[in-house]
Length: 299
Image 1 (cartoon, rainbow, N blue to C red):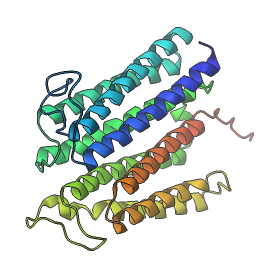
Image 2 (cartoon, one colour):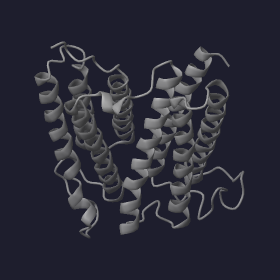
Image 3 (tube, rainbow, N blue to C red):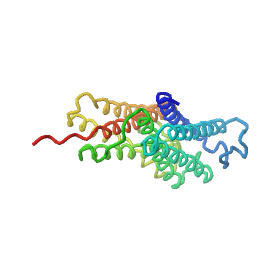
Image 4 (spheres, rainbow, N blue to C red):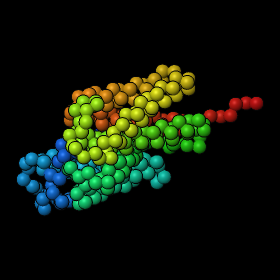
C-alpha cells in the first residue's frame, strides 16, 4: 500500500472509531446495554441473535466494534510493513491495538458485571469515566498514527518551550476531565431524566449522580474562558482562533441538549463535537511538538 492510501486508511480507521463511540452513546442513552443479556462476545449465547427490541441496538454496537477492532489490527500490520523499525508510526499503531483491546475488555466487564441499562451502582459510575479515558487514549493514538503516516516527524517534547509544554499538558488534562465528567452527566441524564434545565429527576430517590450533574457544565465554562484567555494573550494571531470557537460550539450544544430535555440527537451531536475537539487538540499539539527546535539567538 502506498503512502497516500495508507494515510487515507488511517484516517478512515480513526473516524470509524468515532462512529463506534457514537453508536455506543446510543446504547447508553436508550438503556439498551442489556440487549444481549449477560453474554459476551456473543449475544444471548449465540453470534446471530433474534434482532428485536434492545437487542438490535446492542448487537449493532458489537458488530461495529468488531469491525473497528479488525481495522485497527490491519492498520498496525500495514504500518509495520511500510515503516522501518523505530518509526513513530509503529508506536502509534501498536498503542492503538493496545487501546482498542482495552476498549473490548472494558466493554466485556460492563456486560458481564451487568453495569449496563438501568444499573445505578457506584461501580458503574466509576467504570464509565474510566472507559471514556481509555476511549480518549484510543482516539489520541489513532490521530498520532495518522499524523505520522502522513509524513510528519516524531514529536520533540524537550524541544518545546516550558510554556508550550504547560499549555499542552494542562489543556489535555482539562479536556480529559471535561470528557470524564461529561460521561457521568450523560449517565445521570439517562438514569434520572429531568424536565428542562431546572427540572427535577423522575425518581423520588436522591442519588449522588444527580448532584454531580453540575460539575460538567461548570468545568466546560471554565475551559471556555481559559481557552479564550490563552489564545488572546499568547499572540497566536488567527492561527489558533478556532480553538475557543470550537469549545464554544461544544458548550452551546451542551446547553441546547439540556434545554431540550437531552433528546438523543443532541446528545450525539454534543459527543461528536467533543470527539472532534479532542482529535483537533491532539493533532494541533502534535504539530507544535513536531516543529524543529529553534536555534539559539546569536549573542
